[in-house]
Every structure is written in C-alpha cells, then in structure tokens.
Length: 335
Ligand SMILES: *[C@@H]1O[C@H](CO)[C@@H](O)[C@H](O)[C@H]1NC(C)=O
Ligand SMILES: *[C@@H]1O[C@H](CO)[C@@H](O)[C@H](O)[C@H]1NC(C)=O
Ligand SMILES: *[C@@H]1O[C@H](CO)[C@@H](O)[C@H](O)[C@H]1NC(C)=O
Ligand SMILES: *[C@@H]1O[C@H](CO)[C@@H](O)[C@H](O)[C@H]1NC(C)=O
Image (cartoon, rainbow, N blue to C red):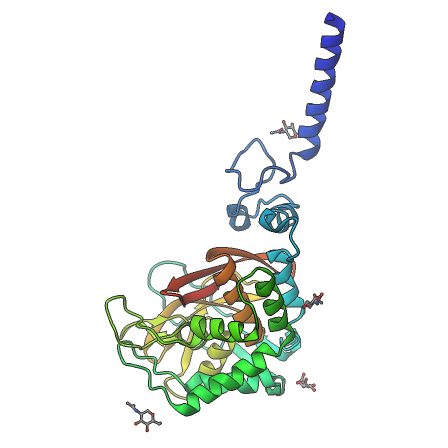
C-alpha cells in the first residue's frame, strides 16, 4: 500500500512538472490572467501593448477564447473578422499609396505642426473608381460639421445614402457580415441588415447629451469627421476622409502635424489641424475600402461593444465602439 502511494505521487509529480515546463510559455488555460513574472510571457490584452504575449496568444485567446460559439453552426467572431480582411478586394495596394509620416509628436501636452508636408504624398486615384468608392465619396460633403446646427436632410442626400448602401451590401465583405449576423440571430433577412445599418450609421441624433438638435450621426462622426468646438475636432476615423480633406488646396482642408503613435503596417494615428481646429489623435485603417471599415466597426458594435479584439492580416488589433441610444456614437481602431 505504501509503495503504491509513493509510486502514484511520483508519477503525479513527474506529470505536473513536465506540464508546467512544457506549457508555461503558452496561453493554454491562462487567457485573461493577470501579469505574472513567474511566466516568461503573458496572456491578457495588455500583453499587446507590452509586447510580451505568448506566441499562441492570438490562436488561443482571440480565436480559441471565443467559446460561446462552440458547438454552434456560426463561424467564430475572430475568423469572420479575419476573412473580411482577406475579402477586401477594393483595398489599395501598398504601391498605390505613399505615406510621409515625418515627425512623431508626444502623446500628451501641446501639439505643434512639426511636419511641413502632407501625410498622403501619393494615392493612385484610378483605384478609387470602383463602385464602393464612387458611391462613398459623394457622401463626404453631405454633412455640416458644426455642432448644434441641425443637419439639412435632402432627397438628394438620402438617394446618395441608398445608392451607397446598395453597393455596400453587394460586396463580398458585407455578404459575410450578412451570413454571420443572420447565423447569430441578429437579423432575419437583407431588409433587416439595411434597417440595422441605417440605424447605426445614418440616423441623425444630437451629439451633445443635453441637446435635441439633430446635428450628428455615426457616419458623420466616424467616416467624415465633425467639429467638437471652435478649438477641436471630433471623430474622423477613415483614411479616405482624411485624404480627401488633406488634398484640398484651401480651408477647410487638413494640415497634417505629425503622427502620435508608432508606425504600424495597416493603421495610423494622425495629429492635424482641420479648418483651424486641432485634433491630437485620429486613428484609422490604412488603404482599406469603406466597406471594410464599416464592416469592422459594425460587427464590433453589434457583437462586442466597448473593447473588441480583431485579427487584421494576422495581427491583433483593438477596436473601440460606443453607443448613443442605439446609434454608433463613435468607433475607431486603436492604432
Ligand atoms: C516555467 O518553465 C521554466 C523552465 O522550464 C521553469 O524554470 C519555471 O519555474 C516555470 N514557471 C512556472 C510558473 O511554472
Ligand atoms: C471570403 O469570405 C468567404 C465567406 O463569405 C469565405 O468563405 C472565404 O474564405 C473568404 N475569403 C478569404 C480569402 O478569406
Ligand atoms: C494605378 O492603378 C491602376 C488601376 O489599378 C493601374 O493600372 C496603374 O498601373 C496604377 N498606377 C501606378 C502608378 O501604379
Ligand atoms: C437645405 O438644402 C437645400 C438644398 O441645397 C437648400 O435649398 C435649403 O435652403 C437648405 N436648408 C437649410 C435649412 O439650410
């Protein structure tokens, strides 16, 4: 009996020892655990900032951690998000866009214009001739950026929104969004998806909490940009909106000041002056089509409101979304 016990203890010790030494550089059973110096790498979202994630962090905690869909027919959230990247056939290639980052500005304190040249030094505009761009670009001048001034809704603007929505919902990206949201029971049919999109993005609402003036929308805030006050800018999380404003010869154009985070392959953070108002940080995806940006932001808002982790070209990114009475208040990628 004594011998049996000691054999058993010995065996347990061997097994658990080989387990810790073999697996303590992995996120198996450690997703979300607090920082712990006993381990050579970490498995919570902060490891993304500190660059000390275990190599299987993405596979285990971002893909594998999505346990709620296990055993169901729907694809995993992270897989859908990554397929959107692969299916963004309208995204511009690296050779179609030349960026000029110039000065890196401090994350805090006063920001000054330390970059004499434009951020976008070249964009191959013939790439902007596909329907998703030709239907998106006319929407950029449909809004009054001034706070507390009601938007002027016209039949022409509504027609442009509907035209864009027709094109958008026809893209491979939005077909995936449709399949996924339908599988998850968020919509029943295409008309539900149209209604949902309009509520999230196009319906007007007051930007200021106390106001009743319909001066804003998710689309204006995120995809176009608006003024916060006489001194600052609000929103603007679309590279195309930035580019179109920067390209204008005179005010209300954008004057790029510098970048406020490190250089990343698919996202950027910019500081600038727009029409005499400054913004310290507008982050956006680079070179992506509006179909992609809107799909990422919409799916994060609907499925993982607040902080949402996604996989973009194999890299984990964070998208932040906020709600205002059922509409998108803001949505942006944390660059
Ligand atoms: C991790 O593995 C190393 C080397 O194999 C070992 O020295 C260390 O004690 C292990 N840490 C934990 C928390 O198991
Ligand atoms: C594009 O999306 C479809 C789903 O609609 C998916 O089956 C396909 O794998 C995706 N393409 C790529 C290259 O990921
Ligand atoms: C710009 O894009 C068009 C259409 O894709 C392509 O034919 C052309 O070669 C590109 N121009 C440059 C300078 O890369
Ligand atoms: C709204 O726009 C239309 C068409 O441009 C214009 O005729 C009208 O005066 C505008 N209304 C307001 C209140 O600005």
